[in-house]
Length: 272
Ligand SMILES: Nc1ncnc2c1ncn2[C@@H]1O[C@H](COP(=O)(O)OP(=O)(O)OP(=O)(O)O)[C@@H](O)[C@H]1O
Ligand SMILES: [Mg+2]
Image (cartoon, rainbow, N blue to C red; front, side, top):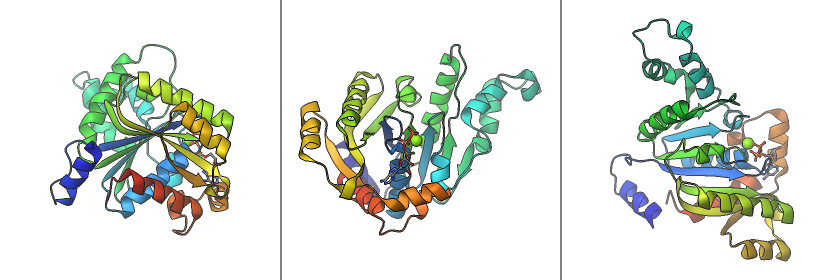
């Protein structure tokens, strides 16, 4: 398995991998994508998986809040600035030069993790130029990290517009309901048809009471042909932290969601 090969290279004490291992998280609205992304970042950081690049690819960005990090500008704002000759200031400065120069303002640097927020929503028109530019920067940037963790919006927009060349693992989140699983299955199908190369796809069910799945739900998952990686239990501490606006990275280590998520990431085997 490719994931394992990379892991062995690291544990043999080699330099940082040339291409970061990318985990993208997708799923219907409100199914726990951002929570799972922040728990994955926490796990990677605590298991020597840094440096990590967190990418918030949801226009309604809030991964930063769950990590306690906030960038000066979003990538969307940066692209808008770069389109304004007044902002650029000199005809000798190209858009690419301006973006490269300003990119540091869009990157928040934290302990073992840097965060980029894509921002949006975008207006109408063709974004091919912006997307190509973004892909170029993403590919260049991700070379300096071991892991890229990408929190997506429900519609897989960024993956379908190929702002990332390839994804090693796609985690599709669902709530523990038949309707939720049907939506996850549609996202799973959509992901199969994307041009973006996706190494593995797995389902993660979140907010399951006591971390258990009823037989009917298990049958649904089998019937849809999805690979269930694991279940994150419903955790009142997550709800409490969310209400108080506290970063999820500060959740106690004994918290059920943290433990459930850890077991899931252990199965992925990226840090052992
Ligand atoms: N394991 C959990 N236990 C309890 N509450 C949870 C858990 N996971 C997520 N939540 C809560 O569910 C809500 C949605 O979670 P989250 O924001 O992570 O979902 P999302 O899929 O990223 O949503 P969106 O589609 O709006 O981006 C939040 O209020 C969060 O606090
Ligand atoms: Mg979210």
